Amino acid sequence: MKAVPKPPLLLAVGVALVLVSCGGSGAVTVTDVWSRPVPPVSPASAVFLEITNDLDSAVTLTGASSDACGSMELHETTMDDSGVMAMQELTAGLRLEPGASGLLEPGGIHLMCIEPQVFEGSFDVELTIDGADSISTAVAIEDR
Amino acid sequence: MTTKRLAKIAIAVLAVSVAAWVFVIPRLRPHVFHGVVMQSETPAPAIDLEATTGGMAGLDSFGGKLVVVYFGYTHCPDVCPTTLSSLNKALDLIGDGADDVQVVMVTVDPERDTVEYLAEYMTYFDESFVGLTGPIEDISRIATAYGVFFAADEGDVETGYTVAHNASLMVIGRDGHLRLILPPELTAEQIADDLKYLR
Image 1: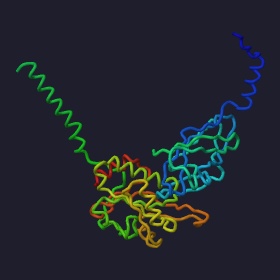
Image 2: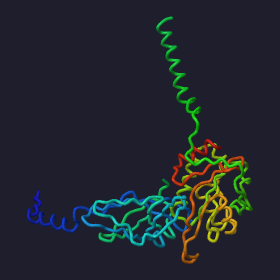
Image 3: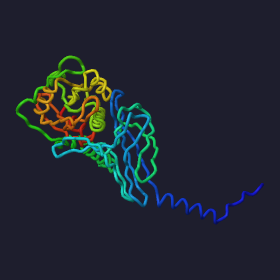
């Protein structure tokens, strides 16, 4: 059997150094990406997720896009003292300091899917993040 | 008395005690409501709106059921689907007794929520759910009578708009009186717990 040549140690160290410099000490990650099922006549749905910034610098989730939505906007639902729920677009985005996590959840911040096209199963979404690469992930449509 | 007989008696006493603890004592405890209890001497404000089941409907149109009234709208992406999904889950938890509960949503966006549109939207969450709509003046009057505020933000049908609204659930008893207000943060389990007691 022909022996596979091992890469020179210096080259391996060099590659590792390049990776660290590009990625900082971590990455921006998203988990638990889901959307509540809505009727096919529904003109809007909401996408929820958890996003964590393990980079050394702050990042801002500014929005998202998906072939399964006419458009997407970052919104926040708020409730005042009298129980009135209102919704505003977060035009400045959701800023995450290094090490911070942000939870997009029902009754809070969410990505609004305007004119949804997919109503069961899952669909793909691309998150736009200022200060980091965009992230593509699947959205599970689940009735939680 | 033999030891064997004493042991049998002890086991029987223990079994009766356990059964009482599990099945009887919980029923003797007073129900602690998750929602806000209302004790109004006057009947709940009348509702007379066009129903997704056809024709006009009011609180007395549902065969003496407990009526859960929600003020919402179909273009609402977050709170309304969450609330209607919770109500569907609550009815599942109630089980057979769910037939004694009627969920209705009064739209706060009658301009976009036509009867046909509302019907498709409501029955998606549960076949029994009924939507009500009508002139904005009538809906405003009814909402105000229930202490429910709503207001559309800037925009029109073309540009789109959202509607701020109170998302509490109003529970009307079989006697036609407002019995309970369920705040929006309650879980399906908590809603079911209160409705089960009232139905």
